[in-house]
Image (cartoon, rainbow, N blue to C red; front, side, top):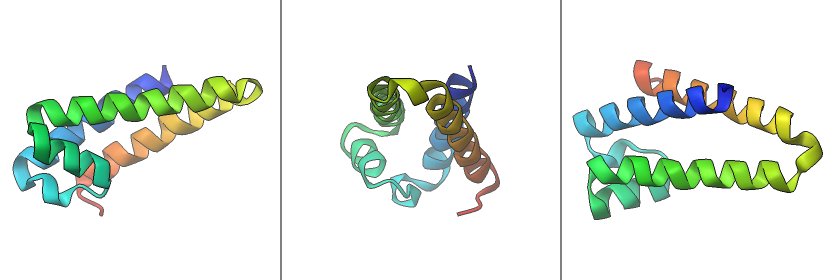
Length: 89
């Protein structure tokens, strides 16, 4: 639940920032490229779903650490959402 809550908050705040300031403000190069190619409305969810897929893949690969990895990634998503919301970077 922490992972999905953090990922959802990250999607919302990333979408808001890219709408306000454009794709050039995105630090993640792949997120920026996808948003520039397919547009912000489709680019943010698509890139974030791919990002979440990689998180789940790595967590499944390192099965004994899965709960810790998912919690850590959820907290990192939450930190990214806070950074997006308050424009910390």
